[in-house]
Length: 395
Image 1: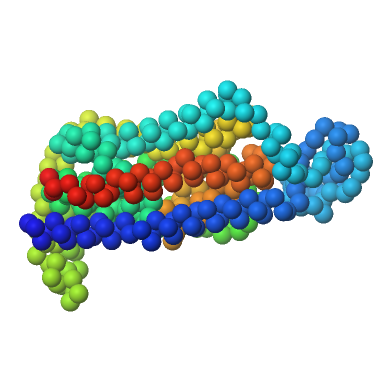
Image 2: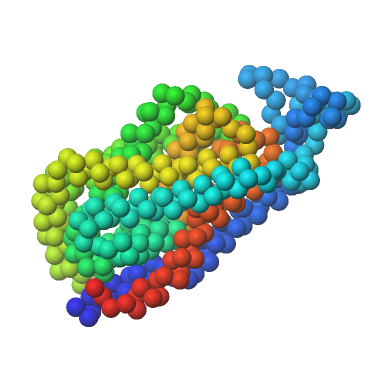
């Protein structure tokens, strides 16, 4: 038991290495700083009242809408209805009213809500065996692991050990992680068709997005993979759990994995047992699990809506369009090779949300604000929580 505990601590500590934290912070801040530098140094026009500007639009395109980034489509003409954007223009356009502070507070509350729903989900899946404090530790460390792992990998592998250290059998921990992954993917797969009923595909993938065709191709390939993944996760736990056990036995025959073969076989057996338990759960159990999963994802999405509403005047339809664009944003983050999507997230936010404001500087600033609220807190909370949690005697 002592050796097992040491191995778990080693796996967890390795996943949370300090160098990974610094890489995540460096990538995020570097791309955010580059975006701000680029927006400050590139010329971009903003619409103003007729007679207040020095430029007029002379270009034409298929949508007959001015592209404010293409300076050659405008010519100097005074008086005009466009002018070059400066930092002072952006700062003067920001109104720090009670409305702005209200929406920023709501953004923080939705972040808290996201994790609250995750805590409820863990409590449901563990039959309330974990206290709220233990569930909080699990979720914060899980989020910490996800923040440090490439988006394409996530923190699921480490999550099994985190749950196991909180007195949940490894096989059952594995089953719980599989269920959470299945529910997350199922919510996304079900939401996509609904979004495309209300939002035109051309709007989700705007023509002015660099590599728009490539982004669409990647999106639909990744979406197809998510459907396949949903079917695989469902099958591995509910239809053919023995295949999962056999797969583990086969993999751990490899020479460099042989020393963990007995543990892998035991885990396979526990997955089969956990599968039988979860198969007998009521429809209400699964409905509650999916409900809190939906709650966590909706809360996650609404953070961006709140941040944009704090500084932009948006109507209901525009807010729905923002939610739709986030499906593209989060999918790009999920397939990112960088820790927690660092760099990719900030850049994708700037490109996808650019259509909601004529100010590139403002959008770059909001991208940074979004990551400060939704990403960096997990790095700091996890770094503070981890040492104390590891020192705690294994439950």
